[in-house]
Image 1: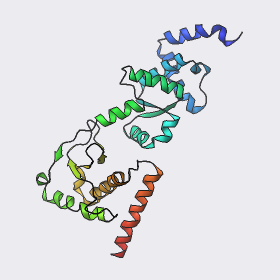
Image 2: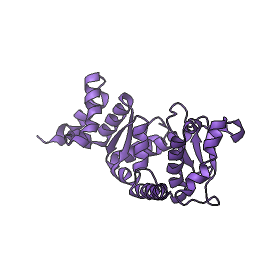
Image 3: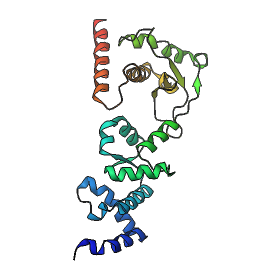
Image 4: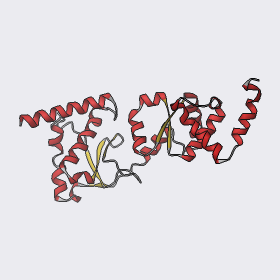
Length: 237
């Protein structure tokens, strides 16, 4: 007897099942794709959709397609830093999740949902120079010298803003190149040491001046170039 004979019955059972054992097993089947042991029932789009939602309810996950994994490695890195388990799904399953998100389920973390959540999480409390302590001002005043180490002159240097906070609830970000403000924003705590401030400033300057994204070969090349220029000046000096 072929599977199509009882497919509708199996689908009905899986759609209506509410026991923890069945729901946990369905949720685990989403991860089965990466393990290579996903059951045949996950080929049924409505069952796969239920499994994806069950996993979403039970775990802190973010769903991405294979194409997104390659096109936006910087976003994937942010997802993991924020404590999400990144789960790759097929294009067909990802399309259904995107439809669900666009229909109003904004708690669902697809690429689109995560980016919206990530961008909205930034909340600055800017601190002006005259509000800083003497030691903090001395470090901030070295900004131009630091940028000149990598060939960024005073006339081409991006604006630098200092903020008490960076992100709501998850304030582990030290700095960011804010494309809306067209400025580098650095967390005030980085002014506690010249090394911390310089490292964050150069990292964000690489984004600001080249457009390179985190976790890409281009960004690694820019940082390697910065290291070389800085080392050359240090040794020559």
